[in-house]
Length: 429
Image 1 (cartoon, helix red, strand yellow):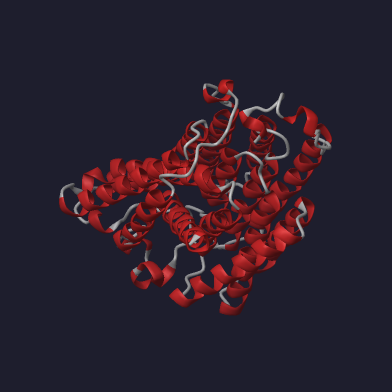
Image 2 (cartoon, helix red, strand yellow):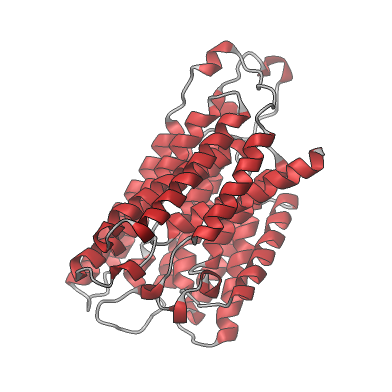
């Protein structure tokens, strides 16, 4: 029975993380905008990266709050509340709201997804099986991109997205969350010293705010630079944006306990590479294949973890994007997608955060916007160049330096069993 229950929690973690990731990464829908103005449609598009930043901050804040409670059922019930909130939001969009409410609904979707992702991470990231399911679901939503025909995106036209995530997927996640909440309702309370029940470490929340807000502001600023002067190379602007991204990652990594910041560096490096490779439409079976490759990379990362190997793999993908990112050959797109899936899975297996909110931030950071979006999408319709790949490679190089700095200031110390109980804090878990 214990194995069956653990398997149920693993499936729940996978579905919940996937649903939350899709909700943060993609707009709620475009199909209800038929009678909306161009201004409101533009507002909806702009709300996607802003909603992602909000979702990341909410996820980490909820993870920190839930981690302070000692009853596991609190985390499961909170995650269930987030899933139910998403379902109500999507139901209202179909049957109640007008197209002009889409921007607001997209923000609500991101908030509810953040609650789901943060609470679920706090519930499962200390248990090996469910933690693997959580990482696979979160990374799988990132790797799958537009999810293609699996979400019934007609003709791969982004303006024909029916609903992301679809209500049937939200309902499936909610049903499993009900089962896991019921199963974990009687789990014993975790033993902690009395002072730990009132402590609320804020550094992970500050790390999420610094990372999300800086990346969002830099991305929007660089996008405005390209819109104002589309025919200029903007090499200096890109350099400033890369520097700001690297500094934000450094600040976030140093705010997290121990070496948990490695996950932040890997996520910050993966997102630009994903964007530089481009959005290749793929059939539903292709998404399943990418999930299998991601799982393989995850298990390899668990067995042979190395942050520098992970960054080397990311750098290799950036070089691949420099020379093949503009290719229209299906085999090249498939190779890039497979390499991204393998690398994302390996990064998840390598990160291994000790503190649950740190793991939530590492997964949620995969859904943040990237400065590559401004570099790659040219207002004048110019063809793609190697600039996105070069920019992604520069960010990967900065992350490698950041990991070295983190390892220098946070050496791996030997455990001291005699003093562990006296000096324990929430951030040391």
